[in-house]
Length: 373
Image (cartoon, rainbow, N blue to C red; front, top):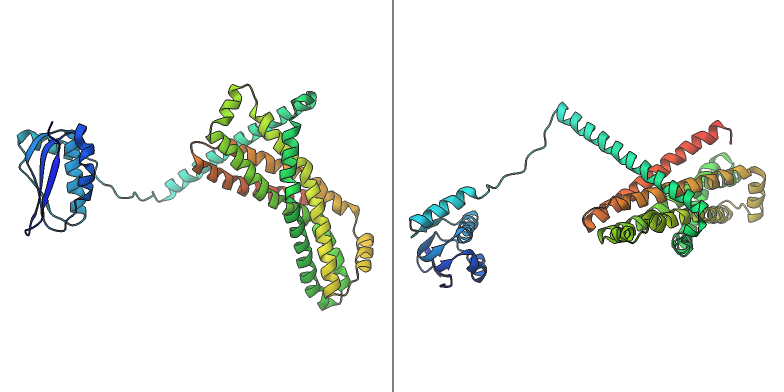
């Protein structure tokens, strides 16, 4: 079989590209690179007179070259093809897909209503999936209480270290800075009324009741929740979760329960650390900016801050932990296909966890206000 070859003659005003040999699918690998390197700004004649044989693959290669050069502004003419070759070229040309532009999205009330309906249906399906996952996790937790040997203590303590101990520095720094900011801003406003001493009440109630645990939960959702989704999602992409099921291991027992339980145990501890750091930062700033001594700060804190302010924040902590743990692990189980899906689900996990934590905090605020706490 004669090897395919091409010769480009661009000495005149019109360039000529002569093709010879057998331009068939079996031999295209020897000449594809040469076709890709052909470029000219002159009018070009594609001379097929020396071709011994041509099949569909060779015809597609010729027509692709012709289309590319015409797109670059060159005029291309095919010559020298016999009747059978010309018929094959015409057939392949007719079968080549035409390049289409981007289709504009439909406009109007009906398309908008369709979009709203699809979004609502998708949200409903996601909610059902989340509730199913939550119920499955509760079932496994109840089974673990009945059969404590199912608890994977090594995984639990490992997650407690990652979620809790390793997060102490950032949580303490966050709480300290929040206390400093509250004291500084509160002092600026209260000084106008000569009520600087009430800055202690502002700091203590704000941090103990709301900001300490809420901001802690947000940081944990961004730090640990995203890590849960990324790690479990990567395992699903690599089919490790399918391998677990094949080995008779329950992914909920192995992967989800240790993470959720670690959050339930450690989030109240982190919230308490944030509260202490916030009060310390507020006391330091009050001493520097307002002259409220540490002794006076502690006295006002003891006299005017009810223990329920601390209890309200601590009561909310386990519920925030369940929300973060369930949403992040559920999102990990929705990963499909590739690493791009891991990134999308991790982003969705953080956004949804933070949104639900804030919504739950608002619900708790309304509840405690109605019961007079």
